[in-house]
Length: 187
Image (tube, rainbow, N blue to C red; front, side, top):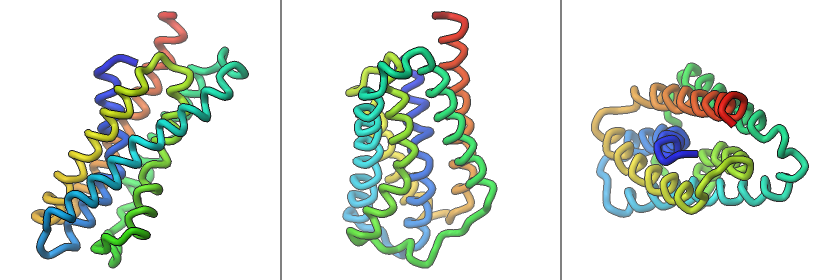
């Protein structure tokens, strides 16, 4: 996977955390440095950790499914993308607990928003991916997206939440199709 695909993938994976961060920003009257650090570290950290775990899970099964690896990557990315698009169309509002920044709440949200990254990490095992670069970009870009989302949510509300998830879903589907086309026609 080339550098630009990793950048797009990082943005796509970060959109769930971006949407949650918009809600968090919307629900807080006055943001402090600790809010930015908590949100950025939890979401960025888990977005980087989960693909790493997924990669090592995938590596253990690589020899069994090497002949269909491109199909697996395509299916995983497309299903995750479709799920994100579906969620963007459900028009959910921020919940009343969105202003909580405690350990349990943040841990649950960080895990929930990074499950997609775990599945993408499994697909990394079947692709030519620089894992360190990928997890670095995913973590840093998610960290930055969440900080920006917290501020935007605090200033402008949550009307952007669904659009972010829709865009992320479309990007994942496009990446899945790109991987499939490359393996079927250019390998």
